[in-house]
Image (cartoon, rainbow, N blue to C red):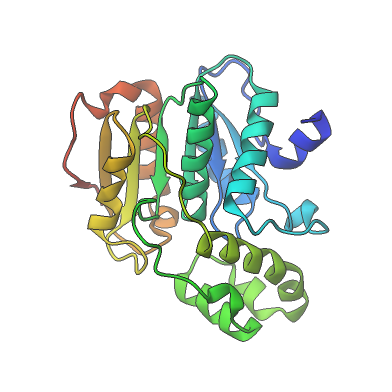
Length: 264
């Protein structure tokens, strides 16, 4: 992948060339790289945070969104491979970003690489049916209603017609990618998996979050915080602290499987 293509996919808000680890953050459906700006700032002394920018939004608004999650994971993995600098790689994904982080981790391991830790936030395990099939086929009004119900989308975007016309195509393509996604058959990951979820998330129950344990032979932990699908907005400090701890001691997830714990 060319350097210009890499720059389209990856953002560095706070360069940290001397940080011991690179943490790649993948946004939710309809989200953009800037969602993780506060995250990047808070972690800048612990990791160099790279945030993924999907096509069809912000400075990439003129590009058509991708409707195949596997194709998205391929492009992201290629960008990371071109950008590698020998430092350990960790992945953090929320909602759709969690599925993409999982698929990118699969590609890294399949190519002989290693992932320090995979953080999967606000998403049921790949082995659990997603429960959504047709949101991407809704009318614009129906799609806006779904976004409002889930929270996490800037209210101004949902109420300004001009802005809606700009963002809805990318959001629709993201939902299509999520709803048509099917994981490929493969062995479990080798890396540690840290799952985070909100205790009142309408899209993820605790059993579905705990099912991520099936997808790794490495250490596993599940943390439950108060809140809905975008629990991490209210609990940013707690999430950052947990990420910082796991990056400092990724093997501290334990030698065996841990039960879930409530942390807020």
